[in-house]
Image (tube, rainbow, N blue to C red; front, top):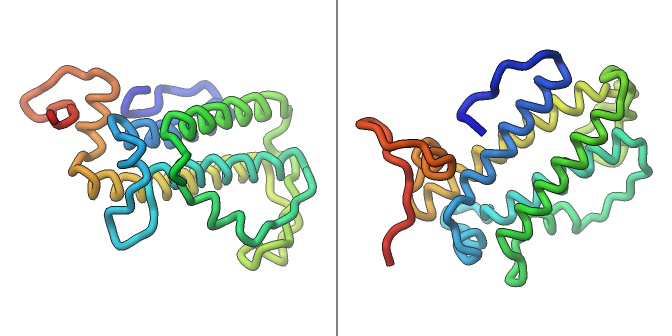
Length: 191
């Protein structure tokens, strides 16, 4: 995916394209990492690249279950658990699961005729408003873009703390851009 979203034909395509762009940031920050690096928390935060990918996957699936109007049961430990990238987890597996989740979302959104369709506001968390009965599918997609972008920013900081790699050189390496005088594609350090 290029560094910017290509032109879009309509609202649905635009929302899905911007969500895809934010998801792609996780492929980029994970580029070239080992499972051990994806498990490391190199800053004062407990956040890891692998854990952030697990979290955005669980978050997207949660919101799509709301769109499908599926009953919700909050497991008190599940929120913290979906940030964990355990010793048996692999970066390849969590990325594959995230890509599968993206496909599930795109298929669901394609099946909905009206992005204004109501999505009932859950009543199981204090941050959900009491005075709003429903959001729209449109609102949910915008919220997912916001959430994914927020956590992509966290992932950028974690990645830079791991090995100093930053977004544009990583993107250039990931996408195979040619080197320029002002941008060198990231390459793994020689061991």
